[in-house]
Amino acid sequence: MMRWLFRGLPSARLWRAVAVGAVGVALAGCSWLSPRDTRYDPVPLVDFTPERQAGIAWSVNVGNEAGIGFSPAVTSSAVYAASANGNVAKIDLRSGSVQWQAQVAEGLQAGAGSDGNTTAVVTPSGEVVAFNDEGVERWRNQASSEVLVPPAVGDGVVVVRSGDYRVQAFDASTGERVWSMQRPGPSLSLRAANQMTIAGGYVFSGLPGGKVVAINIRTGVIEWEGTVAIPQGATELERVADVVGRPVLAGDLLCAAAYQGRIACFDLMTDGSTVWARDLSASAGLAVDQSTAFVSDAKGVVHAYLLSGGANIWQQDDMRYRRLSAPGTDGRAVAVGDFEGYVHFLAREDGRLLARVRAGNRPILAPVIGTPQGFVVQNSNGSVHLLTTGS
Image 1 (cartoon, helix red, strand yellow):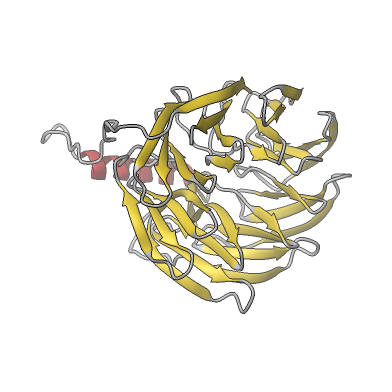
Image 2 (tube, rainbow, N blue to C red):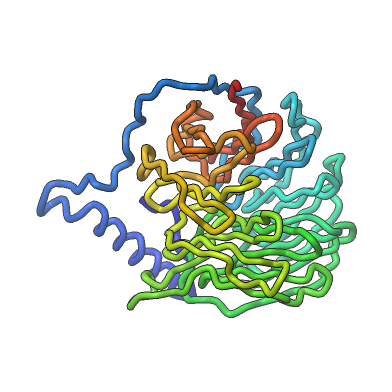
């Protein structure tokens, strides 16, 4: 059911074994004592009559592996992507032609982040590597520890979040460290597909323990903190309530979702208070359009909530336990990927299935990204696709 691993303190390996083993027992049961529990098996693909014709406009093989630390960065004209074998590429969004390619010999653990001028990736040792927009390496600097979150690039800085709960900013031109901020964290946290957002002079980042923060991009000072979820339960595993995916801005609202917690939206124009929140265990993050927030939960159900008030207007459960990615939206449809490489297109008004296409046969861990040209998808073998649907 869960695609995450866990990380923790020096006993992390023991914690991982206990956590994964406990989940396996809880979901599958003891098969040597009784028939296997199939309640949590991925549901087969449902039959439906397509209302749109989905297709693949282009595909580019960036590399041979792309785990939870990898997600494309998309600008108005280009897609920047990376893979674990060290490949970094700039791809024309419309045509799929490769504008440049670069290679990091040590391999990569996270990427890509880009603002169209600077593109940043991170090696397995935590070294941040930045390229200019001709694909020439510009600088390197060391993060404090392992990085499993794609860098965020904007406002003249490259920001990374490392496994020791530290967020650091580097000058995008020189690589000089500008600031470093660290918060205490829980002993156990999800190893999930997370991202940060840069907007309005702030870095917005979710944190383990259910918090989302706004960090001043110039000083590294936390100027606002919101609670998405409150850890609850008797064990460390039960108290895991990490913010997953990317905090997203929707007008005056900042919205985020947490595992074993809630989806919540905060008013950033007043005091940052909670406008609305709904109980939900999110698996991979959310997306928003002009009026609605869309989120995949840990059971593989896609939910739609009105941004004005948080009313749950529909749920789509035809993809239960198919280990869904964070959704994307282009304002007309919602798209979400699954563990077999399928991308499902849903009507934004009521969640009905509109179309389906397979973008390779590997899991889609990165969020689906909606653009005016179509939906950008990277699956876990490193290939990047632009998917389109007819009107």
